[in-house]
Amino acid sequence: MSQSLYDQDFYAWTQAQASALHNKSWEKIDLEHLVEEIEALGSEQEHAIESHLANLLAHLLKWRYQPERRSRSWQQSMLVARQHIARRLKRNPSLRPRLPFFVIDAYIDATALAASDTELPRDIFPPRCPWTLEELSDPDFLPEGEAHA
Image (tube, rainbow, N blue to C red; front, top):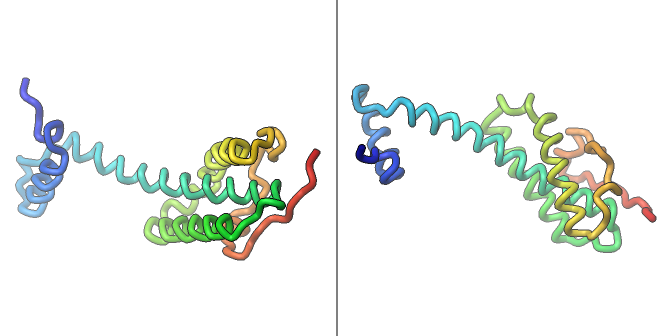
């Protein structure tokens, strides 16, 4: 069995599919792969938001639990993450109701990242995200540092 264009040259396949759609050449549509790719595009948007949230949350944890190491670079990273999240949500408003679920998963990743970067024990961080969605989206919000043993 010969490989399909989808397997041989993905870019060429995308161009052929776009042309077929544009020309309404329905018989040339690779429906199975086209559906798969459209679903993947939606998942990509979710993943991007979760990734930016994990980065933001990791920096917020580091800011809170290592106040002596705070830097402008951390602030810039948090600002950029917030901007990317806001932009993705603006372009994909139907994802906004899913944001609380994204935070849950992103926070798990963020605690691992923050523990690795700070060399603090992972269990020093709260088990659930301590910040509201409003705080996470506020470009001026920075948590206060806490003493830890």
